[in-house]
Image 1: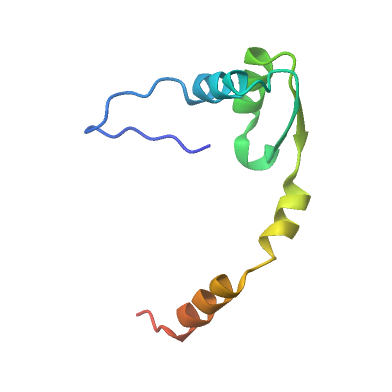
Image 2: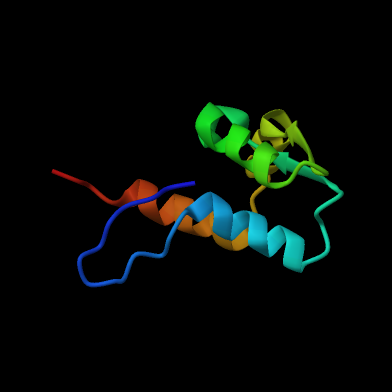
Length: 88
């Protein structure tokens, strides 16, 4: 989760509270949810656990990294194109 303040946009509130609300709205308040603990941070994980006591949070970092290695043809084309560009 990335947060920042944009002076042109109103304060969206607590991002974890928004995530928890969406999870409840989708009927997932008693489900297992995959997260990347290393990138989410302890503060946010603990907040989610507090707001969603029926949710089981599991670290899915390993499987997500494996999935990121799978590229469709369009992704491969874009990577090849990016590799031909020279940046100075």
